Image 1 (cartoon, helix red, strand yellow):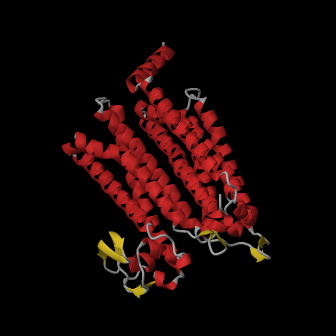
Image 2 (cartoon, rainbow, N blue to C red):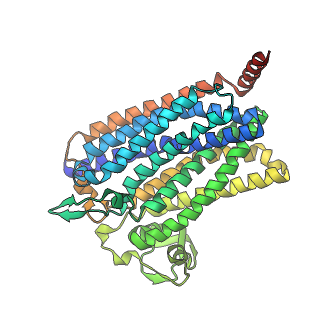
Image 3 (cartoon, rainbow, N blue to C red):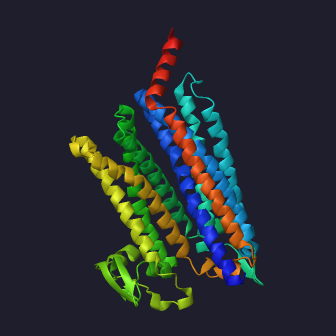
Amino acid sequence: MGNEEAVFFSRVLTELTLSFHIIYATIGVGIPLMIMIAQWVGIKKQDEHYILLARRWTRGFVITVAVGVVTGTAIGLQLSLLWPNFMELAGNVIALPLFMETFAFFFEAIFLGIYIYTWDRFKNPKKHLLLLIPVAIGASFSAIFITVVNAFMNAPQGFDIVNGQLVNVNPILAMFNPAMPTKVAHVLATAYMTSAFVLASIGAFRLLKGSNHVYHKKALLLTMKMGLIFSIAAAVIGDFSGKYLAEYQPEKLAAAEWHFETEKGAPLILYGVLADGEVKYAIKIPSALSILAHSTPNAEVIGLDQFAKDETPPLYIHYLFDVMITIGVWMTLLSFVFLIGSWRKWKFISSNLFRWLIVLGGPLSIIGIEAGWWMAEVGRQPWILRGLMRTKEAATTSGQVDVMLLLFSGLYIILAIGSIVVLTRMFRKNPVERELADRASEKEGATV
């Protein structure tokens, strides 16, 4: 296997691992907050349905955490095996955030275990709720620290280069690089948003399948509210991300927007196809790219004509941008209409068609997360460490990467099927109606 083949298979395996891991990681970051909100609402309203929501979501969350641990470990292993030159160069810089990410996970796991095994053991349920705070904090900080590593790869700083080595490292300065604020904020907001819409799709699906229990209606209303809030937050943060790209990574913004020539009053290009260097069938919004990049309609936006061809990201990231934006806008509108309809008592939001749209929103949100992640990673190419090391320079020269790809692919298939089977059986054997009846009988027995 030549070096080009090793680079290719290394990139494919890394992308496969990250694409699989991000599903469980996103849910792992967002679900704890949803659990905490549901339990808080249940305690505040003295509503057993919300308490049960928190309880059932926690059971499913534990399964996703277990799978996320395996895939997260695979990423750490692959960093060393597939990208040894990168780790040799930048390992002493990213070691701190990687350690802190591990610490945050164990912090979360410890309190999650205590939370699970102390159900109904507190006379004051608010004390049990307090255990969820470190769980949610640990989950979010785990995402923060791993995102810091990715931000450093996009905007490396906090060191000196002497004889090709990174020396005089200031890990705090390296962590708080220009890419960190927008990347971290966007990852958190989209994780919360995606988790809310995934849970909403489950609630809508149960209603479609004939379980007209008020439990599912409350779950749907709560999660759609959270989805709308965090989708708006993601849109606002996305605007800041555009301004960051215009300032620090203009080549990524230009590639994502098919902005070939530097100009003032640059239009925003949505959709379309690129044929022989010409954009066709696109929607062009006049001056919108200048507003996105610099908040001024007549601002100059740097185009791809200012960069060497071998430093230009792949132009297909435009399609990933379109997918991400379209799904984000669609889910914002869908949740907004649902909440207005619930308030105004519109009948069509209870129709099968509208509920199927909500069900579809869960997978669409996952696709949106994937598209955004691929755009972020592919848009950094050809650099693995922007401006310092190219991806092809960082990869292994091993001839066994194709074998590793097959083995890890098999592992991910097993994990995916296993987690789906376990989650399905877990909730089929414990329907909501039975669990509510059991809890009611337990309370009656306790008061006798």
